[in-house]
Length: 138
Image 1 (tube, rainbow, N blue to C red):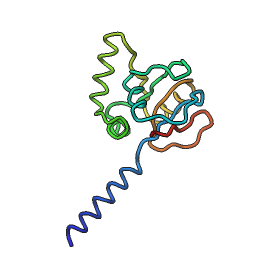
Image 2: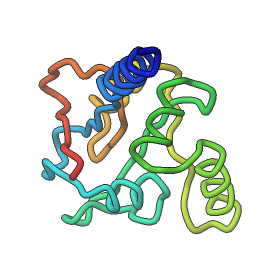
Image 3: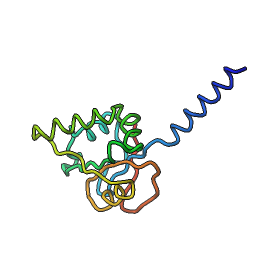
Image 4: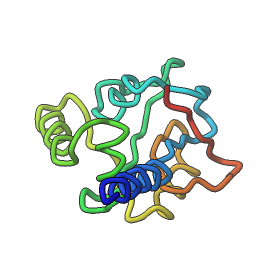
C-alpha cells in the first residue's frame, strides 16, 4: 500500500510541474502562431536571428538564477541555463550574434515584448494582452 501512496505523490508532482510550464509569447508584429521545438531552440540559442519575413528576432530572457528561466531552459529548450549562457558568451565573443535582452522580472519581460516588434520571450502565466500573443510549440 505504501507504494501506491508514493505513486500517487509522484503523479501529483508531475501534474503540478506540467501545469506550471512556460508560455512562449511574441510581439503581435510576429506573424507566426506556432513554432516547432527545434525552431524555438534555434531562436533561443541565437542560431535563427530572423523571422521568416526577414525581420530581426529580439530574444528576451529572465536572469539565469530565476526559477522561471531555469524551468523554461530545461523543459522547453532541453538545455541547462549554464549551457545557454555558454552558447551566448561564445557567440558574443566571436561576433556571430548578440546576447539576448535581459528582463529583470516577468513584468519587465512583458513590457519589452509589448514595445519591441519582433521580440520573443516566455512567461509563467500568460494573461491576454492586445500587444502580444501566445505561440504554440509543437
